[in-house]
Length: 513
Image (cartoon, rainbow, N blue to C red; front, side, top):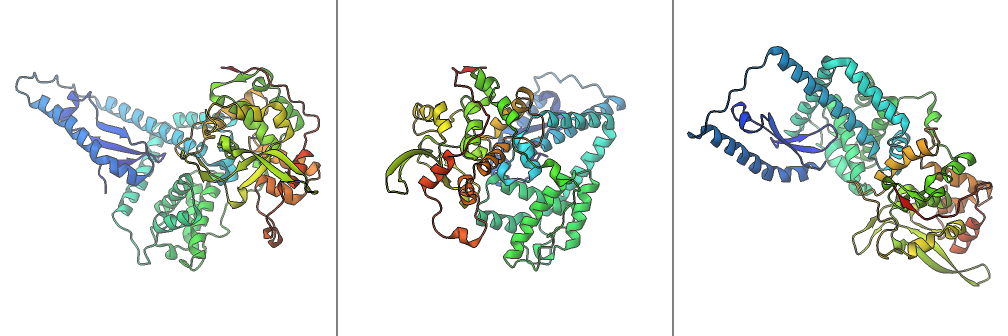
């Protein structure tokens, strides 16, 4: 066990070393030395501990030398604190810790991989700073203030008890089974087999740790249905929302299901266990109406050429347009590299050669190390560039970029999980709500994908072509035969796609806010 390693509520590891009481006057009266290690990976964090330990001990040594130096005047003794002052400082510290836990929990929800999360998390990830979420956070803070220090102290005690249990787990598993645990071998083997990204692995590990902290640490084949039911009840009794509880149960079900499929446990004991919601459809994402689309594309980014700094340059202008005319997922278009915008020759049904521009949505890493990710194998595809995108200047924009080997939207910066559009989504949510006036929380960036699907249906485009354009898997065995629709069929179909009544403003010179 690593003595100075501490995992915060939001998953980031810290180096923490206490400062002896007699040395605090020489160290700005610090009670401890605390440094963020900037990682959620335990092994990486452990590797950083020796250097931080050496530096901390050096600081303590200098402080002790000052204390012992004969030619140094004794430090002015710190006047003793009254019990009331001590209690007040303790309460303030506990309140700050509680606030940090609230903020960390909200951050973890927002910093997700949208296409791999539950419906609830997708909604949060795609409108991370919307008015509704701000109201929820403000309500939580207000309640925390009203609850007072006693309530927060109880929460902290529960959390510390949970951490202590996790630390006890690190000392050695308590089991009579095969020794295969959800947060160890099962997690690692599942993630390796499925090619799960770091964020997905971290979130599933977190749920496994929650499960063990609230039940009993067991080898996977010893976990019972009663354990899972007890976990569900415990979450609800702790005040977890129905959506959060179902999300955690879903991830637990994934790990237990993988173990069952690989004959490591006799059954998926979590199968079918969830909290039933009477009005489950109320959070379903909806397509944009024509009036809402008109409001979006008449907003300052389009009508005035404004480029807000948080909108990341031309990404503010092109990402919504690309989503509307390709149906692609946010990250799929945000991660495009210039070479992914390709011109292809293809024959028509009579053998005449035609040419057109396409977006190559793929999972690959180029020679620069620029990596693209997709949701699944069916997501790899070529999508024709709609004539309206060409008319508005998308191809001219791409071919005019100074770095023809870089990203189409070079201002986008990846988060710690490599997701380029995460921070952009934090800008788009408030812009959609406050500037464009689209206030329905069920309408988010992913609504463009629903809108694209609706207007393809109206255009009478074949279902198989719809699925291929959107990167959806086939519905039956027959869909697995052949190589899919050719480029001519895809292009001809997309030529019929339009949004009747939508008037897009002509591009204007951009200006940065």
